[in-house]
Image (cartoon, rainbow over all chains, first blue to last red; front, side, top):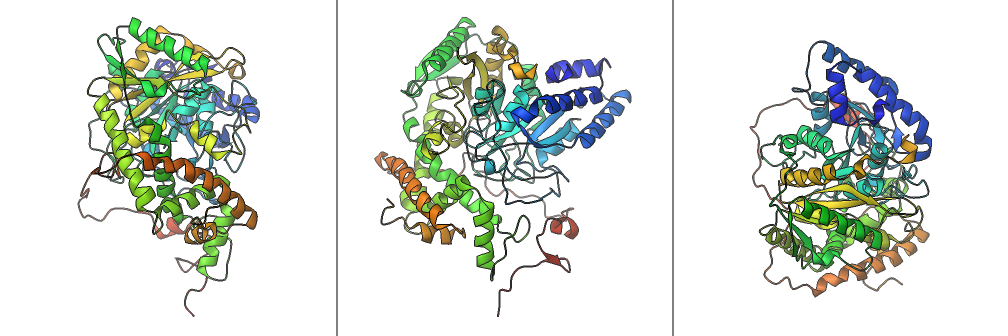
Length: 489
Length: 95
């Protein structure tokens, strides 16, 4: 079954002409047909367009183009419904965009195409990437491929579930406070949030502009490195993309991590951490030591304030970013007697409850009289949180933590309690505030029911090479990433 | 119970968001909980700490001032809920 292949396995076979891009794409489409009624990872996909792109890739391969120049030639990659793909729908999991179709490609999509990828499908997500379960999607809730009574995590739940259910070879998601790493952990795949500024945000619908970053979901760490290299780099259409050279990430996966220093933050071993998650992470740390890494305890003293800081800064930025959805230029307009009424009616009808909650919260913390007490104070605490990490990185090469406090929770379990839902991201939020990079890789399973557990590795700013090297060395010494959700076949 | 200084109606107006009475009540209570959670930031000593707006502040990012291809008028209007003569149509603003 070609849909089960990794990027590196698939490109090797494509290069040897053993398989075609069309057969591979068809195999993913067949899998979607077979399982997506249950998993519900995709909001939509255009099979004819995907197969046409596959044929183009097959012609390029026949004409002698190689994977050296175009590393994703013939590889299906599906994208979260928050990135612009020309002429495809773009809804951000919301009703407010109506029948919107993107007039242009996001930079990451241009880069995927240039690398030869087949860009297809719209993956489900929490509305405007606000949520941790996909239950805030205006369309439907995606199900965890390991247990369909449970959520896949979020906000990039569709992106994680599609990889775990082998409906696509790889996918892209976006991460503002854990929206790639948390669902990757809960679905048992590899999910990476690059350093802020590593990947262009042009064509990514903004949630919190100082925190958002696009990143890959893959079946193994090597694929993550390959995909990161393709999508990284400065872009003159995103003034926050950073002019740092893009290394050949896959070349750094040597398996040798002897002498690297790993920090274990004592503040992350909190109450509320599930014993099975803790046991798996402890075992992973022991494995990393066995591979020659040196493990030391570190302190990130402001950890306890990260969630509160995040839930001021992210909604504040969101309230400003989402002002553009006013019914004037695009989306589902609801008329009113004057423009103000039209804005209020359009936004009242178009946004779901979580988005309204965050817009109200963000507007409040930015409003006259409260700005200093909430927003400015949160920005100062953000400085302290970032400083915690920079201090720690003077002593260690990477930081190792659980990705989430528990395995996947049940659908409906937290959907009525926004604060409990927010706290499910407690280990992933700091990474975005600090602007560093992070990856979640599979490191075990709970016993009954069998659900994936994720190990988070946090790297220095632009330290993706070392972070990937550690993740890869661990992965090669274990077999967790080879376990397949029963539904994936 | 919403606190006296959190006026959900006023904030909703600032945000140009029409809420039903049920939504107003529910949001009022939920935001009260969230605000009391984020109030823990008051414990932190931030004296002398500079705020962080961006983890990697780049300043004066410019490109050469050259004319480049951009969205055509047609593409820009493709998703418009209402349009005429190459323009977006909105409710009357000036009497």
